[in-house]
Image 1 (cartoon, rainbow, N blue to C red):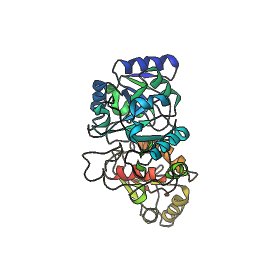
Image 2: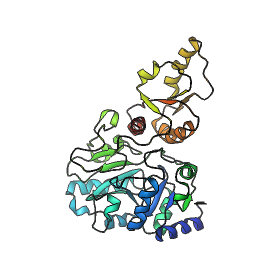
Image 3: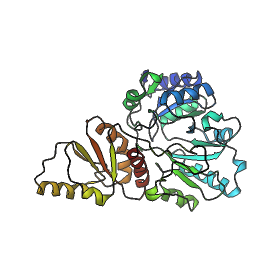
Length: 350
């Protein structure tokens, strides 16, 4: 494994590696991805093997130019209304943290789509990612650059710690900005577009552009890993247990979190000071002395965007503290709150 910078020469070196069928971890605005040529089945197989990822879980294909979309997706298979919505989403929200599920072209390997007739496609918003994709093959399949089911990486060192020598190159672009994976929107079903995975684009932002969007499940989380009758998920991030730290994690409503007694050895992760401070005051009144660092917040400003950006980064940090359990509070169900709760729900289902 070699660590590279975002300098042009290093990006070119990484792009040549992808052309040669090697694996490159690279930053996006969401999390780090583990990239391989989307049309090279041997390279795609190495992605699944490096992550320990089951082959029924499809990959997201990243592009860096809209004209490449036609090589991957058969938009003629969509209704005129859905074609119009696809064009609008691509125009307004790409580049960005949005993945579209679309009917695929025959040229897309079945391994990339887990045998599905659809492909998951994203146009990321990160200069290093875009340069890498353009200089390599124009289409790079890239799930998150972590071991399957584990915490997603928001820094190059997270990739190194989990994948090590399983990847040839890691491009270090610093900490990612959005902090949670892309929103996955299914436009292939012929009806109302469906969010299969909440992420960096909120439901509100989608509905402003294209009208009603289906989003099943309490708190935006589908309790079923995927719909009955399917042999596997339509999208990454639909399995019930996912995004998990090694430390056991519990998810609580704000009311339940407020009523928790302090237990030595546990860590308490509140959404914001609004809920943390009354809890701390209650512990002080009971004469409880809390160890330094045992109480944290996701967002000092009570912002779901800030909380999402901090989520995986903070969970990586807490996972190294040898705590007996991490107790987390649900985020408010606005903006990126459902994406945060989705990750925490699946982490708690380990």
